[in-house]
Image (cartoon, rainbow, N blue to C red; front, side, top):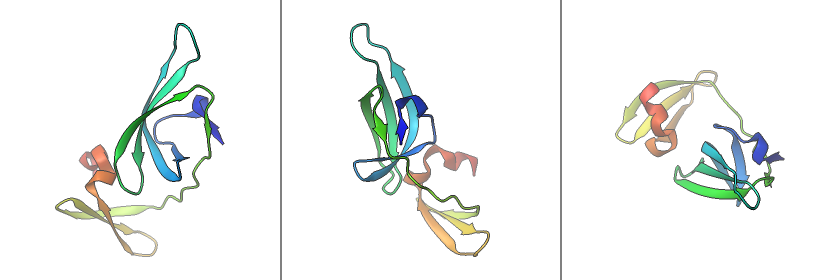
Length: 105
């Protein structure tokens, strides 16, 4: 489990049955009442971005994610193509999933 104190950019959590990547987060201290955490989250599968606010101390299951080393090949419109360096399989990824990271390919 991961709670609001352990949240940072790039962490992937499971929220409402979906894998969500934390793009940005802000800790908000309230004058009266409990602190809150506002997060900008990206759905890993669909690529859509949502902003959600949670009470401090909220806990979520940490998602188990496998990372692979891939090589960028080319892009065709809104689809970016990568190659797995171990199996040589090609992987197509939408521009929405890559986000602003596409500027650094």
